[in-house]
Image (cartoon, rainbow, N blue to C red; front, side):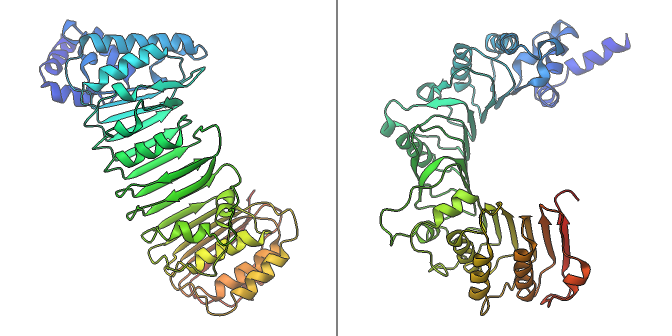
Length: 422
């Protein structure tokens, strides 16, 4: 009797209250509410959000992606038959093999439901799913994540875009240059763009033009990048998967060309091949226009024994007078890096102070002798430094006696010398 009374109390709650409760529990549990009473049999099919992940599957289906796909197809069918209200969010991130025709029907169904977020993040598929942009009419769409899809626009220049889209992420998506540029440009309020392991066939020359864009992340095989008319970019992460294509004209400078349009940038993250890309052409000692807003720089797997890459890193650091945090991970040197170390020491001997630098971390050190010069230089030229961390990949670290001998511009700096296994 008590259980029946409790169920009735829930049943009499306004639908918006019930919906806000059911969307906060896993979909598997929401479906189970159908056994409570006849009033609850179809309530789960009218939710405003559907998040399909691995938690919806019984334990016995763990290794059977086809059976899992059939179960998901059954859930989507029940919703399509019984749902008569808006669906604000759909997220699909599960190990299952869903028939492409089922997914196509569901996407068309969502088009008329006022969806704000469409997140196709992970699923098992023997071939890419051709996303039906020509049938995906979602005027309220704000967030779009696509995984393992092929994107084609029947008539590229006729594509009207998404007027409310603020976040776009493409992962392992097959798309050509013209279509991608059009997609980015036609989303007039786009603020966050993430491109991960795109598939172009050949190295792509990517042009990104969007006046509202604030956050850009590229981890992919890109041959060349053009950033044009992106005045509000504050965070840029570029991690190229392939070596860059060299400039035909020696006087061209990728470093100057790209960063001349990034005057508002606050955070910069580059990988080894990205630094190599910026080393093409002439490398200025400092950029023509300083990056006054840049406070965080992350350099991953940089080659310390390559002079041109070292020059790029130095040019960027010199061009950021308000730098506060510097993170560097070092690739294993293939030759003796002492020549580079001596060059940098000579270049930095005069007139370079990090007046705002607070945190420095260097990971992947192979030669402690070379790191010693870097530590000495940073300590002597960083008056407000708070933490300096050196992580060695070998069994070696600086002793307290060694560190005590160094001149320190900052009285409160804390120095940590560690090994990767410590």
